[in-house]
Image (cartoon, rainbow, N blue to C red; front, side, top):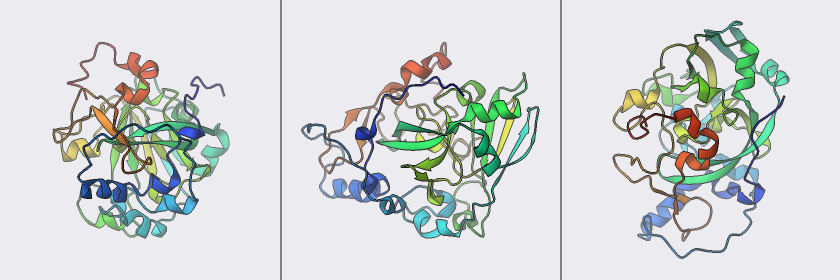
Length: 300
């Protein structure tokens, strides 16, 4: 299959594995030194060499396993991911229950090295392995009246202990406008750092939308629904004032509790200089046309 996007990042830009899932310790150290909001002198760019694979499993946000940053690594081994079925329904020509192994056999798997920007104002560079969501939607046949793609995370409290508590309404749900979902930057990731994606990172398949804040990239997907109505999303339901449907990275629209104008790259040490946040997380050239005529301060 032909792909329309050319990567502008290389392995030299990748956030080291040693810090990918150890962000909390780094930020705690900054706070302890009173440096969390201070910019330090710029350092020369050096090649970032990924660390051992084991380090990647030490830190993550995945409330289905608990709200503490260490909970996913502690509890994700409980989750059984094989076999795994994704129900694809709604306004599609070929609805049904699709086995992930069968899906993967029909997809073109690529490495995509993407910037990752958290709504909490930290950032990193991550190498994903996956396929364009468009390829899957083309496989099932999107009907002409469909306008949105809704997604749902697995709900299995016996294996995902965080779901025993109503931290947010379960199951976790997210959604995209159809043109966002069909954009060549939007992928379903099955791997990370060249290896199978671990449970705490969203195994066996998670969404990755690099120009949006990270919480839009829903993990452990079990349902994809094509619809003509804007779908409900979990964080918008939990706090509509802070989290809107689009959640595009936009340095001019602050979170109600902090600025989004700059970010702290994770992985450069305690004295890493904050850098300006780029519109659409640096993918403005590729995606700005999706939002022509929209008020992006109102529709954030």
